[in-house]
Image (cartoon, rainbow, N blue to C red; front, side, top):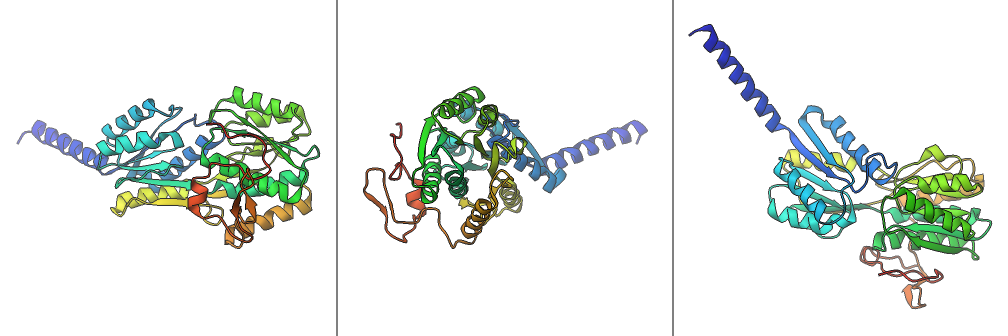
Amino acid sequence: MTFTKILTGAVVALGLATTAMAEDKTKVGFVYVGPVGDGGWTYEHDKGRLAVEAAFGDKVETVFVESVAEGPDSERVMTQMALDGADLIFTTSFGYMDPTINVAAKFPNVKFEHATGYKRADNVSTYSARFYEGRAIQGHIAGKMTKSNIVGYIGSFPIPEVIRGINSAYIHAKKVNPDVEFKIIWAYTWFDPAKEADAAKVLIEQGADVVLQHTDSTAPQAAAQEAGNVITFGQASDMGQYAPMPRVSSIIDDWAPYYIARTQAVMDGTWSSTDTWDGIGAGMVGIGEISDAVPEDIKAEALAMKAALADGSYHAFTGPLNKQDGTPFLAEGETADDGALAGMNFYVEGIVGDIPN
Protein backbone atom coordinates (compact mmCIF):
# COMPACT_ATOMS: atom_id res chain seq x y z
CA MET A 1 0.00 0.00 0.00
CA THR A 2 1.36 3.39 -0.99
CA PHE A 3 1.91 6.23 1.44
CA THR A 4 -0.72 8.26 -0.43
CA LYS A 5 -3.36 5.55 0.14
CA ILE A 6 -2.44 5.30 3.81
CA LEU A 7 -2.69 9.07 4.20
CA THR A 8 -6.00 9.16 2.33
CA GLY A 9 -7.39 6.39 4.53
CA ALA A 10 -6.28 8.22 7.64
CA VAL A 11 -7.97 11.43 6.49
CA VAL A 12 -11.19 9.57 5.69
CA ALA A 13 -11.09 7.83 9.09
CA LEU A 14 -10.48 11.14 10.81
CA GLY A 15 -13.39 12.67 8.90
CA LEU A 16 -15.69 9.82 9.89
CA ALA A 17 -14.63 10.13 13.52
CA THR A 18 -15.22 13.87 13.48
CA THR A 19 -18.65 13.36 11.92
CA ALA A 20 -19.52 10.74 14.53
CA MET A 21 -18.45 13.07 17.31
CA ALA A 22 -20.60 15.84 15.82
CA GLU A 23 -23.56 13.47 15.55
CA ASP A 24 -23.14 12.45 19.19
CA LYS A 25 -23.69 16.02 20.33
CA THR A 26 -27.14 16.90 21.62
CA LYS A 27 -28.37 19.97 19.77
CA VAL A 28 -30.53 22.34 21.80
CA GLY A 29 -32.37 25.28 20.26
CA PHE A 30 -33.87 28.38 21.88
CA VAL A 31 -36.45 30.72 20.34
CA TYR A 32 -36.51 34.17 21.96
CA VAL A 33 -39.19 36.86 21.77
CA GLY A 34 -36.74 39.68 22.54
CA PRO A 35 -33.05 40.43 22.06
CA VAL A 36 -30.59 38.66 24.33
CA GLY A 37 -29.47 42.07 25.55
CA ASP A 38 -32.92 43.17 26.74
CA GLY A 39 -31.76 43.13 30.35
CA GLY A 40 -34.88 41.18 31.36
CA TRP A 41 -36.82 38.12 30.17
CA THR A 42 -34.75 37.03 27.19
CA TYR A 43 -31.50 37.91 28.91
CA GLU A 44 -32.32 35.42 31.68
CA HIS A 45 -33.36 32.68 29.23
CA ASP A 46 -30.06 33.13 27.42
CA LYS A 47 -28.20 32.84 30.72
CA GLY A 48 -29.92 29.48 31.01
CA ARG A 49 -28.68 28.51 27.54
CA LEU A 50 -25.13 29.45 28.48
CA ALA A 51 -25.49 27.39 31.65
CA VAL A 52 -26.36 24.37 29.49
CA GLU A 53 -23.14 24.89 27.52
CA ALA A 54 -21.13 25.23 30.72
CA ALA A 55 -22.70 22.10 32.23
CA PHE A 56 -22.23 19.78 29.25
CA GLY A 57 -19.30 21.24 27.34
CA ASP A 58 -18.66 19.60 23.99
CA LYS A 59 -21.52 17.13 24.54
CA VAL A 60 -23.99 19.81 23.47
CA GLU A 61 -24.41 22.38 20.77
CA THR A 62 -26.81 25.24 21.43
CA VAL A 63 -28.36 27.60 18.91
CA PHE A 64 -30.75 30.49 19.31
CA VAL A 65 -32.74 33.01 17.31
CA GLU A 66 -33.64 36.27 19.04
CA SER A 67 -36.41 38.83 18.49
CA VAL A 68 -38.79 36.32 16.89
CA ALA A 69 -42.33 37.67 16.54
CA GLU A 70 -45.13 35.59 18.01
CA GLY A 71 -47.08 34.06 15.14
CA PRO A 72 -46.17 32.63 11.72
CA ASP A 73 -42.56 33.81 11.87
CA SER A 74 -41.94 31.78 15.00
CA GLU A 75 -43.29 28.66 13.29
CA ARG A 76 -40.82 29.18 10.46
CA VAL A 77 -37.91 29.56 12.92
CA MET A 78 -38.89 26.42 14.88
CA THR A 79 -39.26 24.43 11.68
CA GLN A 80 -35.81 25.45 10.50
CA MET A 81 -34.29 24.50 13.87
CA ALA A 82 -35.87 21.06 13.63
CA LEU A 83 -34.69 20.63 10.04
CA ASP A 84 -31.19 21.64 11.14
CA GLY A 85 -31.07 18.73 13.56
CA ALA A 86 -32.18 20.12 16.92
CA ASP A 87 -32.99 17.38 19.42
CA LEU A 88 -34.65 19.73 21.90
CA ILE A 89 -36.20 23.17 21.31
CA PHE A 90 -37.22 25.65 24.01
CA THR A 91 -39.82 28.18 22.84
CA THR A 92 -39.80 30.95 25.39
CA SER A 93 -42.92 33.09 25.07
CA PHE A 94 -46.67 32.57 25.55
CA GLY A 95 -47.51 33.50 21.96
CA TYR A 96 -45.39 30.62 20.66
CA MET A 97 -47.90 28.10 22.03
CA ASP A 98 -49.83 27.16 18.88
CA PRO A 99 -46.77 27.39 16.60
CA THR A 100 -44.94 25.01 18.96
CA ILE A 101 -47.79 22.50 18.84
CA ASN A 102 -48.00 22.78 15.03
CA VAL A 103 -44.29 22.25 14.45
CA ALA A 104 -44.03 19.47 17.04
CA ALA A 105 -46.70 17.50 15.16
CA LYS A 106 -44.47 17.55 12.08
CA PHE A 107 -41.33 16.46 13.97
CA PRO A 108 -42.38 13.72 16.43
CA ASN A 109 -38.76 12.79 17.20
CA VAL A 110 -37.85 16.30 18.35
CA LYS A 111 -38.63 17.33 21.93
CA PHE A 112 -40.21 20.74 22.50
CA GLU A 113 -40.54 22.78 25.70
CA HIS A 114 -42.92 25.74 25.72
CA ALA A 115 -42.66 28.46 28.38
CA THR A 116 -45.81 29.82 30.09
CA GLY A 117 -48.31 27.96 27.90
CA TYR A 118 -50.78 25.19 28.64
CA LYS A 119 -50.96 23.02 25.48
CA ARG A 120 -49.00 19.78 25.55
CA ALA A 121 -48.37 16.79 23.29
CA ASP A 122 -46.34 13.59 23.52
CA ASN A 123 -43.25 15.56 22.47
CA VAL A 124 -44.25 18.93 23.99
CA SER A 125 -43.75 19.90 27.64
CA THR A 126 -44.78 23.13 29.30
CA TYR A 127 -42.99 25.07 32.01
CA SER A 128 -43.42 28.34 33.84
CA ALA A 129 -42.54 30.10 37.08
CA ARG A 130 -44.85 31.33 39.82
CA PHE A 131 -44.06 34.98 39.20
CA TYR A 132 -47.09 35.95 41.25
CA GLU A 133 -45.16 34.99 44.38
CA GLY A 134 -42.62 37.68 43.60
CA ARG A 135 -45.44 40.13 42.86
CA ALA A 136 -46.81 39.57 46.36
CA ILE A 137 -43.50 40.74 47.82
CA GLN A 138 -43.35 43.69 45.45
CA GLY A 139 -46.91 44.65 46.35
CA HIS A 140 -46.09 44.61 50.05
CA ILE A 141 -43.11 46.91 49.57
CA ALA A 142 -45.06 49.15 47.19
CA GLY A 143 -48.00 49.52 49.56
CA LYS A 144 -45.71 50.39 52.44
CA MET A 145 -43.51 52.85 50.55
CA THR A 146 -45.92 54.80 48.36
CA LYS A 147 -46.56 58.35 49.58
CA SER A 148 -49.09 59.26 46.89
CA ASN A 149 -51.00 55.98 47.38
CA ILE A 150 -50.88 55.50 43.60
CA VAL A 151 -49.04 52.51 42.19
CA GLY A 152 -48.57 52.27 38.43
CA TYR A 153 -48.42 48.96 36.61
CA ILE A 154 -47.27 48.39 33.02
CA GLY A 155 -48.94 45.26 31.63
CA SER A 156 -47.75 43.52 28.48
CA PHE A 157 -50.71 41.48 27.23
CA PRO A 158 -53.97 40.70 29.09
CA ILE A 159 -53.25 36.99 29.58
CA PRO A 160 -53.65 35.03 32.86
CA GLU A 161 -49.94 35.20 33.71
CA VAL A 162 -50.00 39.01 33.68
CA ILE A 163 -53.42 39.34 35.32
CA ARG A 164 -52.27 37.04 38.17
CA GLY A 165 -49.31 39.32 38.78
CA ILE A 166 -51.43 42.46 38.90
CA ASN A 167 -53.88 40.84 41.31
CA SER A 168 -51.16 39.49 43.57
CA ALA A 169 -49.38 42.83 43.78
CA TYR A 170 -52.63 44.66 44.47
CA ILE A 171 -53.82 42.21 47.15
CA HIS A 172 -50.60 42.64 49.10
CA ALA A 173 -50.35 46.38 48.64
CA LYS A 174 -53.94 46.75 49.83
CA LYS A 175 -53.33 44.59 52.90
CA VAL A 176 -50.77 47.04 54.25
CA ASN A 177 -52.25 50.23 52.78
CA PRO A 178 -56.07 50.41 52.50
CA ASP A 179 -55.80 53.69 50.57
CA VAL A 180 -53.65 52.33 47.76
CA GLU A 181 -54.87 52.63 44.17
CA PHE A 182 -53.51 50.84 41.08
CA LYS A 183 -53.34 52.50 37.67
CA ILE A 184 -52.72 50.03 34.85
CA ILE A 185 -51.47 50.71 31.33
CA TRP A 186 -51.40 47.94 28.74
CA ALA A 187 -48.40 48.25 26.43
CA TYR A 188 -49.33 45.32 24.13
CA THR A 189 -45.70 44.36 23.80
CA TRP A 190 -43.16 42.30 25.68
CA PHE A 191 -40.25 44.44 24.61
CA ASP A 192 -40.43 47.95 23.23
CA PRO A 193 -38.30 50.40 25.21
CA ALA A 194 -39.98 53.47 23.72
CA LYS A 195 -43.50 52.25 24.55
CA GLU A 196 -42.42 51.11 28.01
CA ALA A 197 -40.79 54.46 28.77
CA ASP A 198 -43.88 56.34 27.58
CA ALA A 199 -46.12 54.16 29.77
CA ALA A 200 -43.95 54.80 32.82
CA LYS A 201 -43.97 58.56 32.16
CA VAL A 202 -47.78 58.61 31.85
CA LEU A 203 -48.16 56.70 35.12
CA ILE A 204 -45.77 59.07 36.87
CA GLU A 205 -47.71 62.06 35.48
CA GLN A 206 -50.86 60.47 36.94
CA GLY A 207 -49.28 60.55 40.38
CA ALA A 208 -47.69 57.11 40.66
CA ASP A 209 -44.59 57.10 42.85
CA VAL A 210 -44.20 53.33 42.46
CA VAL A 211 -44.06 51.67 39.01
CA LEU A 212 -44.23 47.92 38.47
CA GLN A 213 -43.82 46.32 35.06
CA HIS A 214 -44.50 43.07 33.26
CA THR A 215 -42.44 44.13 30.25
CA ASP A 216 -38.88 43.22 29.52
CA SER A 217 -36.71 46.31 29.06
CA THR A 218 -35.10 48.61 31.58
CA ALA A 219 -36.77 51.67 30.01
CA PRO A 220 -39.27 52.12 32.88
CA GLN A 221 -36.35 52.10 35.31
CA ALA A 222 -34.65 54.87 33.35
CA ALA A 223 -37.87 56.91 33.19
CA ALA A 224 -38.34 56.60 36.95
CA GLN A 225 -34.72 57.54 37.59
CA GLU A 226 -35.17 60.65 35.47
CA ALA A 227 -38.37 61.59 37.32
CA GLY A 228 -36.84 61.14 40.77
CA ASN A 229 -38.66 60.01 43.94
CA VAL A 230 -40.21 57.05 42.10
CA ILE A 231 -39.41 53.45 42.99
CA THR A 232 -39.39 50.49 40.61
CA PHE A 233 -38.72 46.75 40.62
CA GLY A 234 -36.62 44.74 38.21
CA GLN A 235 -38.64 42.44 35.96
CA ALA A 236 -37.39 38.94 35.09
CA SER A 237 -33.80 40.02 35.71
CA ASP A 238 -32.19 41.96 38.53
CA MET A 239 -31.78 45.26 36.68
CA GLY A 240 -29.39 46.07 39.51
CA GLN A 241 -27.70 48.87 37.58
CA TYR A 242 -30.60 51.02 38.80
CA ALA A 243 -30.13 50.13 42.48
CA PRO A 244 -30.43 51.39 45.14
CA MET A 245 -32.92 53.79 43.49
CA PRO A 246 -35.26 53.65 41.69
CA ARG A 247 -34.97 49.84 41.53
CA VAL A 248 -35.40 48.64 45.12
CA SER A 249 -35.74 44.90 44.41
CA SER A 250 -36.61 42.54 41.56
CA ILE A 251 -38.10 39.29 40.40
CA ILE A 252 -35.37 37.13 38.87
CA ASP A 253 -36.17 34.15 36.65
CA ASP A 254 -33.60 31.38 37.03
CA TRP A 255 -34.12 28.96 34.15
CA ALA A 256 -30.68 27.34 34.24
CA PRO A 257 -31.44 24.33 36.50
CA TYR A 258 -34.53 23.48 34.45
CA TYR A 259 -32.74 23.78 31.13
CA ILE A 260 -29.86 21.63 32.36
CA ALA A 261 -32.21 18.96 33.75
CA ARG A 262 -34.31 18.74 30.60
CA THR A 263 -31.24 18.57 28.36
CA GLN A 264 -29.89 15.78 30.55
CA ALA A 265 -33.21 13.94 30.21
CA VAL A 266 -32.93 14.04 26.42
CA MET A 267 -29.37 12.73 26.64
CA ASP A 268 -30.45 9.94 29.00
CA GLY A 269 -33.51 9.00 26.99
CA THR A 270 -35.71 9.72 30.03
CA TRP A 271 -37.44 12.86 28.69
CA SER A 272 -41.23 12.79 28.89
CA SER A 273 -43.96 15.35 28.44
CA THR A 274 -44.57 17.16 31.74
CA ASP A 275 -45.96 20.41 33.11
CA THR A 276 -43.65 22.28 35.50
CA TRP A 277 -44.73 25.30 37.53
CA ASP A 278 -42.20 26.22 40.19
CA GLY A 279 -41.73 29.25 42.40
CA ILE A 280 -39.56 30.70 45.12
CA GLY A 281 -39.26 27.42 47.02
CA ALA A 282 -37.83 25.53 44.05
CA GLY A 283 -35.55 28.43 43.11
CA MET A 284 -37.13 29.19 39.74
CA VAL A 285 -38.25 32.58 41.08
CA GLY A 286 -35.62 34.65 42.83
CA ILE A 287 -36.02 37.90 44.72
CA GLY A 288 -33.27 40.39 43.96
CA GLU A 289 -31.51 42.10 46.80
CA ILE A 290 -33.76 44.58 48.57
CA SER A 291 -31.84 47.83 48.51
CA ASP A 292 -31.09 50.22 51.35
CA ALA A 293 -33.75 52.56 49.96
CA VAL A 294 -36.27 50.25 51.67
CA PRO A 295 -36.58 50.81 55.44
CA GLU A 296 -35.29 47.90 57.53
CA ASP A 297 -38.70 47.00 59.00
CA ILE A 298 -40.30 46.78 55.55
CA LYS A 299 -37.35 44.76 54.26
CA ALA A 300 -37.71 42.33 57.19
CA GLU A 301 -41.43 41.89 56.47
CA ALA A 302 -40.73 41.27 52.79
CA LEU A 303 -38.08 38.67 53.56
CA ALA A 304 -40.42 36.95 56.03
CA MET A 305 -43.05 36.73 53.30
CA LYS A 306 -40.44 35.32 50.91
CA ALA A 307 -39.59 32.60 53.44
CA ALA A 308 -43.25 31.75 54.02
CA LEU A 309 -43.95 31.53 50.29
CA ALA A 310 -40.87 29.35 49.86
CA ASP A 311 -41.77 26.82 52.55
CA GLY A 312 -45.46 26.74 51.61
CA SER A 313 -46.76 28.11 54.89
CA TYR A 314 -48.28 31.05 53.02
CA HIS A 315 -50.07 31.23 49.68
CA ALA A 316 -50.20 34.52 47.77
CA PHE A 317 -53.89 33.97 46.97
CA THR A 318 -55.51 33.32 50.35
CA GLY A 319 -59.13 34.27 51.12
CA PRO A 320 -61.26 36.05 51.85
CA LEU A 321 -61.06 37.49 48.35
CA ASN A 322 -63.76 38.66 45.97
CA LYS A 323 -63.70 39.22 42.23
CA GLN A 324 -63.87 42.77 40.93
CA ASP A 325 -67.67 42.58 40.60
CA GLY A 326 -68.03 41.62 44.26
CA THR A 327 -68.78 37.94 43.72
CA PRO A 328 -66.86 35.54 45.98
CA PHE A 329 -63.55 34.15 44.78
CA LEU A 330 -62.00 32.60 47.91
CA ALA A 331 -63.56 32.06 51.32
CA GLU A 332 -61.76 32.87 54.57
CA GLY A 333 -58.56 30.82 54.72
CA GLU A 334 -59.16 29.18 51.32
CA THR A 335 -56.29 29.22 48.82
CA ALA A 336 -56.54 29.30 45.04
CA ASP A 337 -55.83 26.05 43.23
CA ASP A 338 -53.62 25.93 40.17
CA GLY A 339 -56.58 25.64 37.81
CA ALA A 340 -58.09 28.89 39.05
CA LEU A 341 -54.72 30.63 38.82
CA ALA A 342 -53.84 29.27 35.38
CA GLY A 343 -57.08 30.54 33.88
CA MET A 344 -57.35 33.81 35.81
CA ASN A 345 -59.22 36.33 33.65
CA PHE A 346 -60.59 38.80 36.21
CA TYR A 347 -59.35 41.50 38.54
CA VAL A 348 -59.86 41.16 42.27
CA GLU A 349 -62.15 43.52 44.11
CA GLY A 350 -60.80 47.03 44.42
CA ILE A 351 -58.95 47.30 41.12
CA VAL A 352 -60.54 49.94 38.89
CA GLY A 353 -60.77 49.45 35.13
CA ASP A 354 -61.57 46.72 32.65
CA ILE A 355 -59.35 43.98 31.32
CA PRO A 356 -59.08 44.49 27.55
CA ASN A 357 -60.09 41.72 25.18
